[in-house]
Each structure stands twice: as structure tokens, then as C-alpha cells.
Length: 274
Image (cartoon, rainbow, N blue to C red; front, top):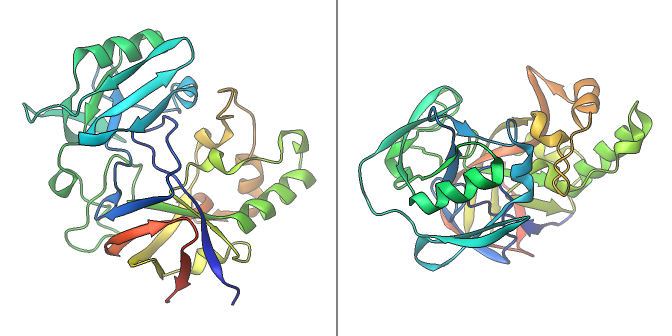
């Protein structure tokens, strides 16, 4: 087997908003440190993502010390948001399930509402250890997740992206390719693997951390959104539907759950243990 290495790491502090690419980051039980601990909700308390608001792709959030974040977007002055103090919990709906969160200061609501052109509040997941369990069909007892769609981490490989782009080039919408990796919003990007090898990774080690490979990642309309322009196309979903249908999923990437914590770094070797 070829040597596998971490090519890039990605942390998205606010769900569905662009994030940062650190050289190293700590692994927590619910995901990479600082990843998807914040989200936007509409006036009814339902989480807003790029599914409803593609323009979220053009906004960016970067982590600061003390749990703070700085948010920026075209036409908007940068805003620093403090992690809200422990206060009354407010349930929000993510994929129909309630999660208790803490609402951020009103300045954040004003900022995002102005940017999106509709009411939006920013909420914070104060304690991932108790707020949201991983899907019980795939979880071990006590496993939790942040405000990511379903699982703590998503891993992808450069070889699989190359293979997908080759298929897109042969398909009905070749003008839309090649697609960049940011369409898939992964946490860990691996170089050196064979295309689709990650489908079989049941247990891997990166640095001093170990992860359990849970299942494929089913993709949605967010992957058709150009992260630089917020415009939507047909790919990669049309090609995934033909070539990468696994059960009910149009699959790209693999979902991971940490089983041993540590720090992961760009350049770390990725070891397939099982």
C-alpha cells in the first residue's frame, strides 16, 4: 500500500459557512476543535444551511482565542462574536431533531440578517458532550457530535476527487468540471490513496489520534454550489447518481468517529489499521 498523508485540514466554525485550513488541530470526541460549534437558525428555530441559503458559501468564519469567532462576508464589516455565556438553553431543529443551544449576542443576529436578507440568529453549541448523540444506528455508547450533519469528521481523498472529475468530464455536464475539494467541505483530505479506497477504511490512525470509519457520506445539493460564487449547477450529483450510489446515498467521502484523541497535522501519515 502506498504511503498516505494528510494533504489538508479544514475547520468550519459556523455550519455551512466557509472556514479555515489550519496546519494542525486538536481532535475532540465530537470532531476537530472548533468545527461546527455554531449555526444559524431562522425565525422558527430551524437551522439554516447552504441548502436554503447558498450565499452562506461566501461568508467566512475564523476561530479566535477564548471561543470567539470573527465573521466576514462580501459587503459586510468583519464582526467578532463572543462565545455566549452559559444561559438559558434554546432548542433548535436540525433535520427535524431538537438540539439545545445558546443564542449569541443580538449583534450577530443583526449582522447575518442583514447579509442574508431574512431573519437569522446565531446559536452556539455550548456542551457537545451532552447535547447531541451520534445516530444510534451507527454509534457506540456515549459518542456525540457537534452541529455537523451527522458525524464528527469527514475524510476525503485527492484520488477519489480526481476519479470523480474524470467521470464528470465524460458525462452530460463536462463544462462544470473539474470540481474543487471545497464542494465537499471535508475535515481531512488525504493524498497517496487509490481512488475510493476510503470506502473500506474501518479504522485509521492520524498522528496520535485514531478514528473509526463509520459509513459513506451521502451528498446533497450543497455539493452543487460553487463555493466562490454561490451559483448552483448539476454536478457532482448527476455523476454520483450514476457511478456512486451506495444504498440510498450518493456517496463521496467517509464519516469518522474519534476513538482516541490527539492532534492531527498537515503532513501526518495516515495509517489504515483495519
